[in-house]
Length: 320
Image (cartoon, rainbow, N blue to C red; front, side):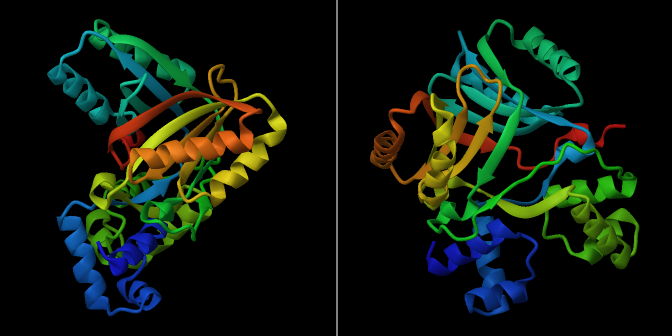
């Protein structure tokens, strides 16, 4: 990847529905150059998917983060379990890890009772292989800094997920399904697949954006192919007064990719994503964090994220 590719990725991370002409003007290259390079990165697997960022809380679902530690597993069995979670109808995100946990995944459920039933079904299938798991229920705040994936600090943004349920119809759901798999579909393409006019499609998308159902558009990257690795750091805060200082530090540091702030989790308060090129850079980040806040926080765990999957809406969203 050269600088032009990086600029294209930056703009797509912030808005993957941006028109080619507009993208070209932003980075000062022609439309055909943008199209050629974008298609090349998609073909080479650098860009894995273009997707709509959907506020599932507005559709009546709660999101739960689940960490799993396995036991007595072969390489083949671990792969089988990963693929099971990745294909599960309620999973919105899946990653394999190196550290205390083997997997982390996010699941959608309409209630804690609904979640417990799904977990019960999972345990009945893999009870011989799951040693331990923990469910994190409440994320009070989260921020994601997508352009740091390509070494750029501009365009930082937070995702705000409202839990106020919004009403949508079957056509809206079709649009969401299509955009979650390919956010670059044109209004004409959507029109053919949904069975509405292009203007009606445009209106419905705008309406879902106003309602806070669609909150953005982005791309899913193969981190390894852009020469980066991601670690997740879990920390516990002993002095609440430093929380805002830690957030400011993370926003400004080019190695901090995201943070999730939790309430009611007895083990840790923050998940922090660290995006770097190599392990020494991880060590440097930990040193800087400890140097600034060591008296007011402690590390709970650090693990390497090996693979990530499922950058699209799960099937549970579309069930009646």
